[in-house]
Image (cartoon, rainbow, N blue to C red; front, side):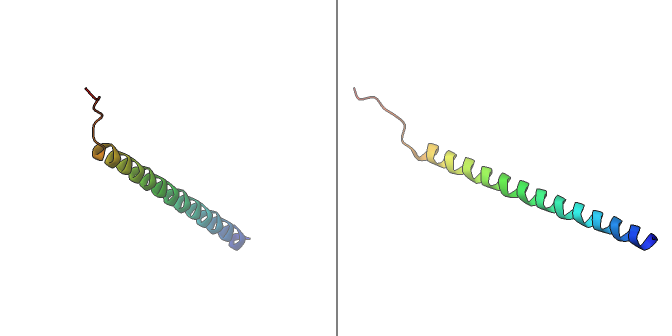
Length: 55
């Protein structure tokens, strides 16, 4: 019986670590995507010539 409890405890810990790793990876990927999107948007704003109304 103690062996079964140990295996269940190890299984729960492993599943928690897998879930935590997946969430950390998703957060990293999303943050990196948002950062790249913001940098690209800023680059297009910086390179566009300012709007000048014809005289």
